[in-house]
Image (cartoon, rainbow, N blue to C red; front, side):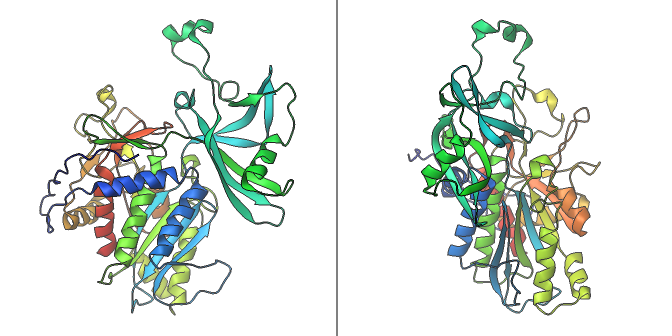
Length: 449
């Protein structure tokens, strides 16, 4: 359904902006909604990003093949991660990289190895809690099921049952009067198993057989799976003037979408960038990034090194390239909450539709330092994009991102940024409808520099 248009305001320029202030393009946010709906899992997110890159002339390279040093756009897919880069004409082996880093995963409920369960006439699916979701937000939601199926021959197939299939029913208040006084208390094991039908006999293999039939895979061919639930409610504009956006997985597909759009814009420009622009979207950020597709794995470093060596570079060229490289770690952050303002730093209140946020934490939960702030300031000024600063309340623990991991693992200057949202880690999050466009503008200017 097409949402009614609202007047397009003009962004206030950042101090010293060198470009005319941007006029908001709601088409970018419309496209983000399409991206979110098409990407219920990390595997779908990278497939969607790859499809957009292909349309822009990028080509996939296999990690098992020898790489050449030709110019143009290339990308590597591994599981739920993608690394894409554009080599300008005449790029030297020591040409530095400019990286937009993000992550593809979101907290959710994931299917266990033995998924078929149930009790008292209800058929259920056994799930495990992934990351740190707001559990209450998953109650009484119509949930679909999506992910990756692995077949006997080792090939994989994406599956997306994007209709009401499962539901985690909440206990009626009549059966737990204490919830009014003591608040809702959920046991992750006992209370979060969704129902998906009726039947006294639980039959092993029913769920996978259903997915085989749904996707047209011969019975018994699926031997492995990585499946997760998602809300089937589509993204939507919200508010009197449609100035807000409600939707799933904005932490952190909002950044993946903006980074993809920025890389395509730079690669499609008539002018060649001075550095090599890169998009690195990792999996498993929500549980520590320690995997072969996570930011703490070798994927990014291996891709960058192979790019240097494919262009005839030496270890010295690799060291020079990394020394001049800058990464913007883009992830969502916290907008000031009108009902809980005391949880925020009293002098730092990021607002939605106020532009991207620069995240700072002196204990290195974020990687930003003063020189990193200068990098981001220059990009925002070049794009005519306002930005805000975020720092945690001293009395509250600070979250973290792939930023410090990237900086420490690869010795790369890294700056933590993002978009301020509400309801982070809920099944449905909330941001300003103009902020995704502003983030993409800042990322494009950063990659162009």
